[in-house]
Length: 113
Length: 115
Image (cartoon, rainbow over all chains, first blue to last red; front, side):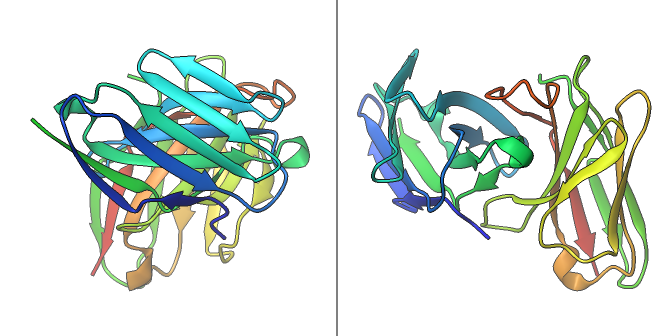
């Protein structure tokens, strides 16, 4: 079953604007990861945030995690046309479920030049 | 480039046939997981292999089976193909079990079409 639910399902913005995507999940996690997928091909890992972390940055990406609300957000600042892709959150429950990721439905981001 | 290689990239099969998909994991990774991604959906976990043994399975029927070899490469086999098996199949390799909080590296996927 899909644990993560991304919101919105689709987002259309202009180059230079910020894009925010949200993810909610249902069960306890060890970490939460964000991935990007271009044109239905392989997934590219963007960032991993552990359950004991609240915020993490990587370049133009900022991820927050609120375990009390079971939610995470991905912020892409100063977006570029090349950021156009589908973005997925994935949860890893850890323990015996280590590495068995549960993905959401994804957010389709379109950045217009 | 993630170092994870999948073959073939595209495949067309007839309903009822069998298919084998292959994955070479990233050097040093002994855990391989397989996912099925239907069009417009997120990937769904099929199963995971660790040191040549199945180490967890998602909600997929037994006609989905796998193997992992001593060099940690892996195969996904699907018997008695159904139209709903049409999807992108993704392989992911990750570090040793126990080294938690490590990312998974995905291959480019195999696009399977069942007609």
